[in-house]
Length: 283
Image (tube, rainbow, N blue to C red):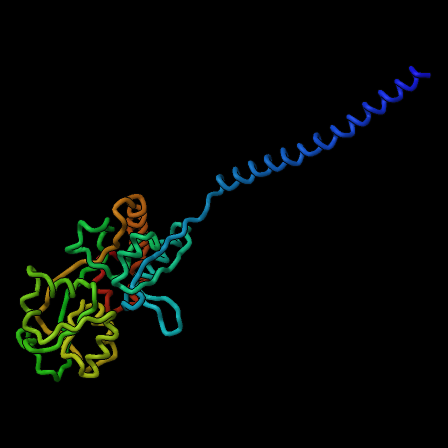
């Protein structure tokens, strides 16, 4: 009887231990399955790759190269070409508009991948990694036709407007540029945008504007009362500015620009911007 009882107790104990062990074995199965699933997902992600997001940094008010319209939509020659580059590579395009004087802070913070917005490379060759130039340009003086200002010398004692952080601004503040001329002005009025400066010229608040010819042509389109002086302040080229360690991205953009010029895409976009078309060197 005692032996029978002992056997029954031993059997019950073994069943109890087996029951306790079962959940542990069951608990390991989901963990192993989860690890396998995670490994499969990671492999699939690695195989497919993620779409590169190209962050295009540009002046929010620098038509015809880049701007935000009254309807909130972005536009401009540089914006359209940047979008065409993204289409060429299958990249995702992201607009990063900013006030022009914030361009370096935006680039250095990584908020954008480049500065692409009618950006003058001359005099800044060592400050950025540059793409190939895509447009020639000149700095001019815009005046009202009835202003009585016919030459650069006539600007003496006048109020001249310019947009901050532009090549025209740099030129008028450079001892080796046109500072001697600027010193004859009654005042050099500095604006956030050329659009505001042009409104002040029309209102008579300033006498002239120092501006690049392509932007000036755009502002004067549809206007008949304004003109450029025949004498120019200087010449320049537009290109795309990258961080100095972004050589791979710069090379990719250059390759895309060549391809889009060869297949006629840049020429087609340029025809929508007659104020700058004749100055484009890559089309």
